[in-house]
Length: 483
Image (cartoon, rainbow, N blue to C red; front, side, top):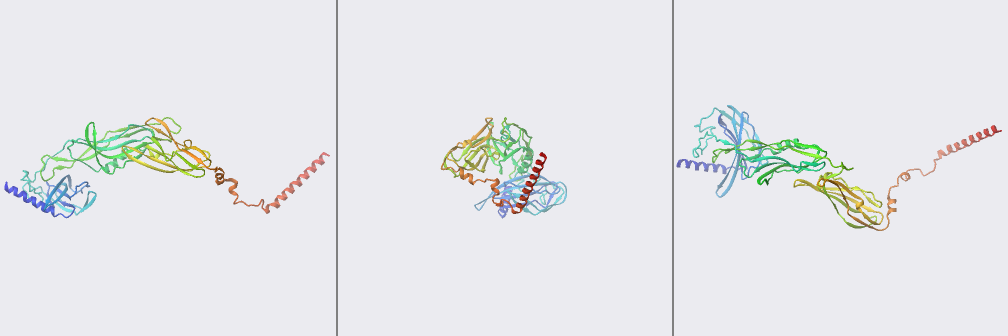
C-alpha cells in the first residue's frame, strides 16, 4: 500500500509540474498517434484561470465517431501562487483499422478562435488490458482507485425536471391590439440532470420562421444574452431562461396558430461510479416540446374610422395649458400621445380649420419602450402656430385624436385642453398681402405691357371697314326691294 501511495504522490507532482509549464492561455492537446481499435482518441482544450463559457463543435475525423464530451477543472497552489484550469475533452471512437488524418482545424472558445495543427492517427488491432505502451491510455491512478486501465465507466441518464414553453399573455385580442409572445426554457430548483444550451441562435432562427405571423407588426425585444431569472410557478421555484420575446400587433381579424415547437438541449449522462480523474459525464441530447397556441383576432366595433384608428391605452400630453401671445407672433405647440400600444402606427391628430389660426405640418418625434411584457412609448407632434386676430382661442376645437381602447371596448377621443390668449392689432390685411394671389396676378411680370401689338392693328382696321361696307350694301338692297 505504501508503494501505491508513493506512486500516487509522484504522479501528482509530475502533473503539477507539467501544468505550471503551460504558457498559453488556451492549450489544445491531441491524443496519441497510435491507438487500438478498442480505444479512443481525444482532443483536449484547456483554458487557464478562466471558465469555459462557450465553445463550438469539435472537428470531424474520417472513420471516427464522436463519443461525447467531458469537462473537468482543477486548482493548483504552487509557491503560494493560486492558479486554475478548465478543460473540455472530445472523445472519438475508431470504426476500422488504418492510417487516418486529422486535418488542421480551428475551435472557438469563449468567442475567440484558436488553431491547431492536424495529426496522423494509426489505428491498430485491439489492445489487451495488460498493454501499457503505445496507445493504451495508461491510467496511473487505476490500481489506486481499484479500476483496471481498460475499464470504461458506465454512464446513466438522470431524470430531468425541466420544460420548454411558448407562452402568450392573451389568447384573444382586437384587430390592432398587441399580444406578447415569449419562448423560454425552465429548470426547477430540484433538477439534478446536467443540462446545457445547444446552438440556441441557430435553433431560434428556424423556430421564428414557423411561428412569426405574416399579418402582424412585430416589436422585437432583442434578447442578446440568455440570463437566468428566478420565478415561482404553482408554489415551486424555477429558473427561467428566456430566449425570445416580442409583441405582435395583428392587422386583420382571424386566427394565429402557433404549432408545437421543439427545443434541443445537451443533456449529460453521468458516470455510475465517478472517479477522481477521468470522464465523469458523457454528452447526449434531449428534445423538449412546447404546447401549441391559438390567438383569436376579433374585429373592431363599427365606426367610420375603424380601419384608421390606433388601438391601445393612450393619454394626451401637452407642453402648455394657458399662454398669451401677440398677433403675428408664432409659438410651438406639442400634441403628445403616450401609452401602451403600437406607437409606430400612431398618426397625427386631426386638425379642424379655424379662421385667424395658421399652422403647418408638424415635426414628429417618437420613443418606444419594450419591457415588462408590453410595448409603450410616446409620439410627439410639434406644431408652429400663429394668429392674425386678437381673442381667446380654445385649441380643443382645433386638435383631436380618435383611438380604440380595448380594455373598455370603446372608441375615445383625445382633445387639447390648451387656451391661447391672443393680444395685439389685427394682422389680417398683412396676412392677405403676404399670401400668393395667383391667377392673373402671377402673369403680370411676364406679360407684354402694350395693349396691342402694331402688327395686328392694320388687320383689325381692315376687318372693321369690310364689315361696315357689307352692312351698307345689304341695307341698300333691302330699301330697293321695299320700293
